[in-house]
Amino acid sequence: MQTFELPGVISDLVEAQQRVAAFYNARICGADKKVELNFTFDGKLVGDIGEAIAVELFGICLVDKPANAGVDGYANNKSVQVKASGTKRGPTFRALDESIRADHLIFLSLNFEEKTVTVDYNGPERDVLRGVKLTTQRTLSLTAVQQRNAEVREEDRLPLTCKGRSLLKQNGLD
Image (cartoon, rainbow, N blue to C red; front, side, top):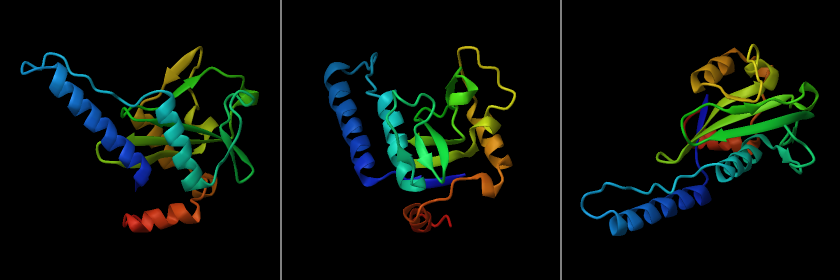
């Protein structure tokens, strides 16, 4: 697994979210703190952040979503699905026809508190789904995804872009 600092603009967004939560919780919760609003990042925003980071790290060229169910973009002549989570959970997969499933999967864990992003899986999508029955949708455990990532051969991974390699060096992780 590789861990990077979140881009500055995302860190700014996280800090703004934290200020909004602190502001409103101080005003509406009172001294007893029975209720707390979290203003959590979820859904589409986390997915879009993940895709933007994957573009920077792996040079993925994004495609129009409605026209390409199951594929977010292309890199190194492979179709790529990008999944991201900010909840310390693994990715959720929908049941799709195998013919529209991506060749490759990038799964990113966003840690908004530490302002980092970890590449938990970089490999063939079929390998992470090996043995998984998908009838409607299913969330895989983060541990299972990380274990499958450890099994991926280096030549089956998408390489980091120059910027991605530079970020590894900046973080002392090369």
